[in-house]
Length: 119
Image (cartoon, rainbow, N blue to C red; front, side):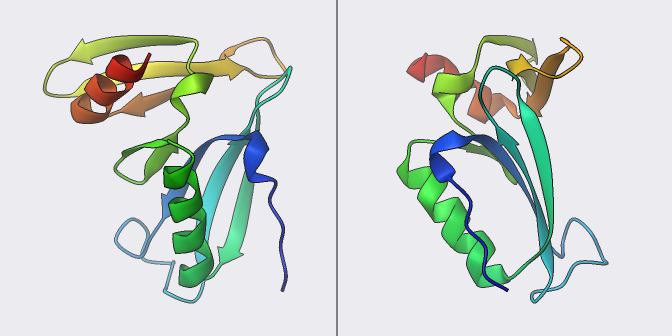
């Protein structure tokens, strides 16, 4: 299967690996991708290979995305960020969905600090 994802519109991505989900293997992984625009939309890609997933992560890191575990976020997409606790991390808002509700993602404390430095 060939797939093209316009990486310029990606504002966040969550990678699922075998460590996260026992139903996922090296040959069939998953990733959630949030696309920016007037409304933030999420797309689940159910079957991606390990190579495709790793190449996608490398491309996002090259664009300056910050990684928090298996979550990668574009610091330029962050509208609001709030640290819940120095040990736990915080919550970031990357836009608003169809229902006008904020799209919020949790990040670890180290990633939160790195994001704050870039904002």
